[in-house]
Image 1 (cartoon, rainbow, N blue to C red):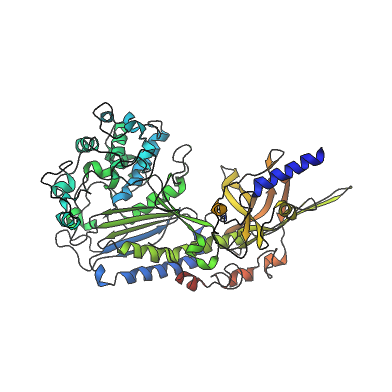
Image 2: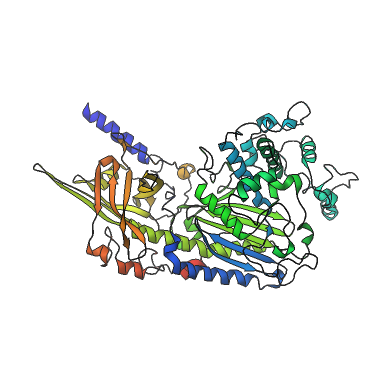
Length: 636
């Protein structure tokens, strides 16, 4: 009976750990793989990286095609701006000349980068109990009730569906109507129309009058759905025009007043507004300066803000530090729907791109997911983009006035240098803070028990376990024996990854990490295989308990006084194995204090100095950072 129960438990254990990734698995390494690095400890590498970025981006401005283009670029961490690049157009408008010198407080039209501000207002009102994200929009806009509300299924269109581009509503109130583009009409063979359909505002009247609420509500009642609600994602600016009305009706003030009072002023974004800034503080493109002073009226929630890189960095710092705490149960940066490819998604209102890290930095060979949370925008003469890298705690703002094609070139140059720097900063902190050997020895009259744990690091695997013994038992071998190997070349990696939780949440002490097993086919890193089920992977961070405690939880405790090599990086001095009810102390040996590193041991000081910029056979596996940067390509 006891043997039967034991066999059953072992079977359950094996299933819980390995059933899905067990056969030719292509499951990626778990993410996040590390905590956000402290960039204050990487000043020299940051200076080198920012110089390379400055030179690469500035070289783009030398082309004649960009003579009429100004741009601003700024990168921020969670705490401060790290660097910025600005360029003033050689040829400027004679009507609205703009600022004599572009800098971090110069205003641009940021277009659809206004949408995150609209969603932030919704999250605030949801948290305050003034609206429900999952309630129908008709609960908050009275005119959408009743038999005269048109063909769109308002009772099924929720606030969340509008914010995440899942409402199935057509795209624009006026700007996409080709009646204002006779050349395109002729090119496509469309019949000539003598009467405009839609409201007499915005582009339909050559930007002499902005659309208002009456225009919007009258127009949406004439529309047919593109899709049923929550069926498929389809980008719509009308979604956000309607959300602006919701915010106004719920808050009892205008949309613009709510955003200004509750977001812009609260974040000290004093240079950001819906009103046209003075020309002396503006980036205004020659030949398209007509749109600079146009106020967008009811379309302000979708694209009406003027802002600068300095102010947008303040906004991004707010997002980076509060995205999981804006409203109960909502992680603001998570996707809400699929988009146009297997690695593209919509959020509220984010456009989210998932890449494997080895697709960005091929020499690293790791398939760990890297998520880029973005929001782009475009209006006549203006192209804008914000990019959030949650894994690295970085936010990027790129603003272009003039040649919009320059946006993709700047973005590529920037990310080609920034991502390797951030990856190296995170990896070096894993080495300094966590890697090493930990042990506990207990001696009693009856027996002596030994427990040891060794944490190592490689770019492919991040932080992982290479030796694990508890109570004189080889725990690592015990886990491996439960794994049903399916290929001779496969191996089991026990990743150690952060949960971003703490035993002492108030003081941020006692970091809670989890051990995540993953099967790796050593000969086919990143190979997607050819069978249907090869790419099916599940997230299972809590696979087994023992006496009510997680078997795979590690708790790291730092020494408040001790830092590594004078860098200011606090090191782990104690590890608690929660399910095993044992605490291990760091082994202070010659290997760690300055001798040679070895497999299964610590990493010496000489090792770290030699490999600081990614050279040698350790952390970067013979990868020179200069070569690595040249190999990166994200695509457009």
